[in-house]
Length: 109
Length: 123
Image (cartoon, rainbow over all chains, first blue to last red):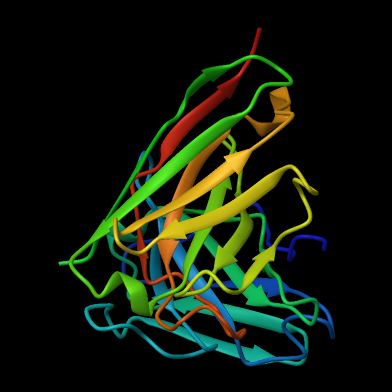
């Protein structure tokens, strides 16, 4: 199962909004509404920030939002804060009963 | 609070085997699926597999082929990953992560993570 496609890096200024895309196929993102997003700061474990395409776990600011169109999922972060600088990974369940990650996107604020 | 603690990492020679453990606390361990995810230094995340709440279902990613086995001991709140025929490219941080459900069906996600344990495959 190939990794989902993410751009390597994105940057934005404080207070601005950015979006990170995650390209998949009809066997993963396009097949199910089971896309999740993870934030990882250097030297730390990943943290779940979005699940089932657009749902936020408790404690995740509403500045973080997710969406899906066809075989592409997107994470949008609005009103960028310094603490948002991190790596972001998308993930999806697949038709092969496996889980696949994107290659990760490094966000610079 | 939910806590997952991995152990068992270290240096192993190519071709060797290793068992990693993941000890959980802060939740009803026997009700939840547990995943293993690895991350090579400076690289992205890679899903290795999941074991269901009772150990009856196991799903594995393809990257390690048949070189890994998942098991769990609910009496010890522990999940294990046994890795065989290790290669230098298996060098990575290995994380265990909790699923919000029993792990038997799809729609997985990882709602809590351990801090990881580093496995280095080198002669």
